[in-house]
Length: 448
Image (cartoon, rainbow, N blue to C red):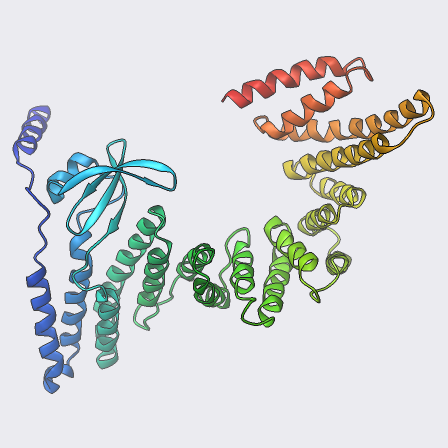
């Protein structure tokens, strides 16, 4: 019986004709806003929280109406049923990926494999509708705190709408629009009636302004403001990249005033203090210390981290960061010392074992470059030095093997192992067999 009912419903659904075109009653929505304008111009009505609640709702509807039927991942067939036939179709690329495009009066939808991936809104009822709705809801709460639950509900609708607009803008590569949407979502949550606002929204807004700054330097100033506000509210992403993006926002303004270079440095130093393992932060510091006069001696970074290690010698992240700094300073010996401490403290850390193998390899290759540049008086002297190089390569193998044991599918580890074992195939009877094994595994993983 159930199957019959479902089959009948499916047939009925298919029988319903799709709407012929997207229908948005713009005049009716604007009429509601005009009525609200008249209401707040009336002194008596202006003093009532209900007037402002209605105004918030009117502006929210104006904001949400054009895209209210859209959601990410919806089937293209459902899109036609919900919105109607597009005005036109075509193809376009977003971030290097080709999409089918369906163009509607208020937005363009990007479709991949029969599903909605993202969209760009191209027309608005009122472009300032979200901000106007927030203003209205805040006024309602100011007039009567007892309406807080209704105000919060309305603000949540605005925040959810703007967050979705941020997500679609990000996917569509419209970074400025996405940043503005996340910022507005945060503003909606910042009302006293809402509760605690999510600072991650400021982080997303700041990150996108940082990205846009490469093409539009004016975005750096706004990006720094968003990121600083997120940090002030206790936010940091898991890896600490917020400090790296803040560095770029300040550094991108260095032509205004040298003060911004020092602000960029301070942002990175704070980031390194909290996230010493973050390679981006370390690379940013090395960039500053080596390319800008008066910032400081790169060796100062070692002093800073060694001072921290004196107080906390079992901090794996600090040892990790120390090793990366010495790598940037082209000192593999100290990098090895640092990463030996990393694996001593955390033997089963893949990155520790992998990088220890890498730094032994770098040390061997540096020495190989030196001996190849020398003039030798005898073949025996050359072979003696070459033997020392191969001994260093040999020291890298156990660390790479441990890394492989911890992560069987890491192609870079296998690449190092098969290359080093091939090099040492005449030095050790086992090396040729190891080369065959790791070369086979390398090809298998690479093919996956």
